[in-house]
Length: 145
Image (cartoon, rainbow, N blue to C red):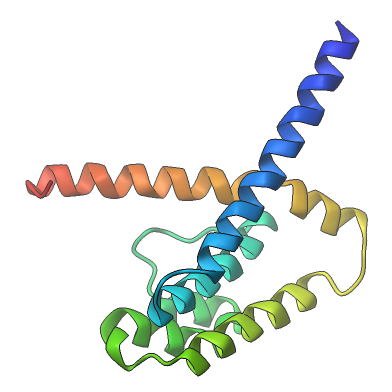
C-alpha cells in the first residue's frame, strides 16, 4: 500500500511538472507576437497563483498590476496584446518574457522549500481550468456558443 501511495505521489508530481512545462513552452512558442505577450502574462500570474494570489476572471491587467507591483511593467504590453494585437512587435513579446523572468527571479531569488513548494503546486492548473469552465458557462448563459 505504501509503495502504491508513494508511486502515486511521484506520478502526480511528474504530471504537474510536465503540464506546467508544456504550458510554458506553448505560451513562449505561440504563433503571433500578441499571443506570446499574453503567454508571458499568464506565466507571471501563474507564478503568483502558486504563492497563493487569486485573480478573478474579470480582473483587468491594470487591476492586477495595482495589486502586484511586479506586474506593473507587463500590464501595458498585455493590454496592447488584447486591444491592438496588430501593433505588438516581436520586441514587445521578447520584452514581456524578460519581465516574466524578472518577476520569477524576484519571487524565488534562491532555492528554498517555499520555492520548491510553489514549483510543485497545482494551483495554476486548477485555477485556469476553473476559469475556463466559468467562462464557458457565462458564454452559454449569454447564448454565445
